[in-house]
Amino acid sequence: MSSMNTFVARVRRFRPVSTLVMLLVVAIWALPTLGLFVTAFRSQISSVTTGWWTAIFDPMHQEWTTKAFATVFSSTWNLGPAFFSTVAISVPATILPITFAAFAAYGFTFLSFKGREAWFSLIIALMVVPLQAVIVAILQTFMAIDKWLLTIPGNEYGDIHLSGEYPAAWIVHSAFAMPLAVYIFRNYMMTLPMALIEAARIDGASHFQIFWRLIIPMSVPALASFAIFQFLWVWNDYFIAYLFAGNHTVMTYQILSMLGQHGEGWQVVMAGSLISIIVPLTVFFGLQRYFVRGLTAGSVK
Amino acid sequence: MTDILFAIMASILGPVATFLFYILLNFIVNRFPEKIQRVLRPYVFIGPVLLLVGVLLVGPTIQTMTFAFMNEDSSEWVGFKNFIKLFTDPQFLITVRNNFEWIAVVPAVTVILGLFIATLTDKLGPIRERVFKSIIFMPMAISFVAASSIWRLTYSWSAGKTQIGMLNAIVELFGGKAIPWIQNEDFSINNLLLMVVVIWANAGFAMTLLSAAIKAVPEETVEAASIDGANAFQAFFQVVVPQIWGTAVSVFITVLISTMKIFDVVWGMTGGDFHTNVLGVDFFRQYFVYNNTGKASAVVVVLMIAIIPIMIYQVRTYRKQEELR
Image 1 (cartoon, rainbow over the protein chains, first blue to last red):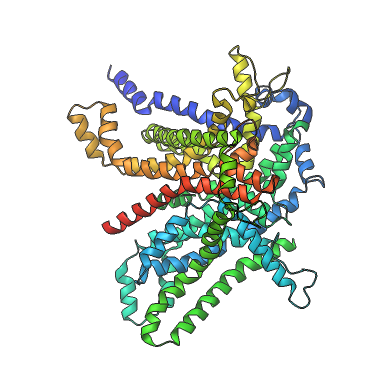
Image 2: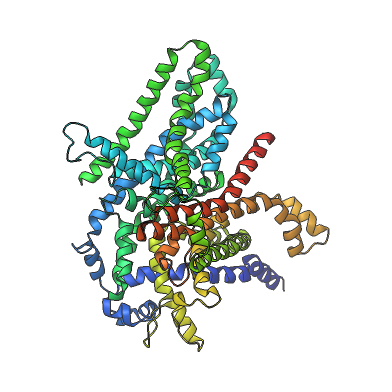
């Protein structure tokens, strides 16, 4: 009887109902993505004639193939170079804003000055500015800069230009990252022990020394978690890369084009999507703990 | 490969140059008398950022506002003509209606769903909790382009053939008739299906924050309620919910902002066709398809009018928090 009671207690503690409900929710969440992984390894014929789940239910009578991957890396889609273009946009667009934002956050946290609250309110207000509100004017500004660059001797043919190149995308990404980065870094820096900084001041350390020797090393968790965010955001971005660095084709652009031609079979766009999500998923699952910490530290775009 | 070298150089030289730039600014400020130094010093730190957001966010936004009152190539002033054109166009009214549908559904459902999942997983063992949460969270790492591929296949419809889209396959399994869902405008079904994609992508965010909030609720408060005779539901709504309310509101606001600005998922799923257009997408259509800077900017102004109250709310919340520090 008592063993029966402990059994019931154990089942209860296992919470079968909650587990079942969650299994259902998780299935709804994961199945569409599973479809991506399965379809990428199917042949064209089977991907347009049968549902991807038939390949799971009957894996032995299914023609598994990596042809779609060959297609996306072939000269038709050039996903290899697109991969490198994506890296070339993402890495600097992650590192540059962090450097600037860290300085600003220090200023907002450890220096008291007139207008501090007002400037910081502006930063907060700018967190919600939509991309659409600035595109036209920034494109025009960059074109004006290019026109001015033409007047530089030796650049008559516009070899040196901003529009359509990587730095243009880095600059725009940095601007959009800035308000949130400053906000998150400042919130984090406010939790650092003030006494330590004051002690350093009394010892005659300059603001620069304190920033570089004390604050930056102590702020690594916040900097890292924002870096993850920003990297995922830039890697997955389509519009800024397309509008400002259009001379370089990124993966999101190629996959959207593949999606436009899904009539020729879903396997190609799924293979392309799979390649594009490998890096973010690795970053995400490898650094999930920091990512979650970053989420709970500030809000998100 | 040269691209990568260029990027690596920028990644190393960029921060180094930034530091040198700041050191230079600091050096210049140090030349001034003590009194002026004290005034200028903060701007060594915050100045470059203020300049950057001023030139790239504030200035362009103001410029867009003025473009909204000019013609298609911004060569002359036209007053409110762009707005009159927009609001007398039934297509645009549908676009505005869609935006209202989005903000009515997505933030609320995301928060409720996130709270539901956070509550359910909270009491499960650590392994199940971690696995379930990871799966719910995963779509956050996926681009809207990949998400559009995934969901367009899920919603796809094949005329008179075996259905390869999961939704239609399930419908047929239960004896229903497969239909082209994405083109189905009845009761805004296609809009709702697009919202599902965004909820799918955002639920993990809501879940994570609400889960952290739930774990911060002191066990004693819940125990005290159950000793007082409250059942699980009463304890949840009367003890837990009030304590996580602040988090729920901030999650709601964050999702609300991103929902107002929504455009990427709609762009990837329908491009705004079949009456699923939203303001964010309409801007791109007006600007890049119809080459009409005036109307495109007017669309942005309509969007900004919706966003500004939230902007004010955010700043006020921050001010209130500062007073509490």
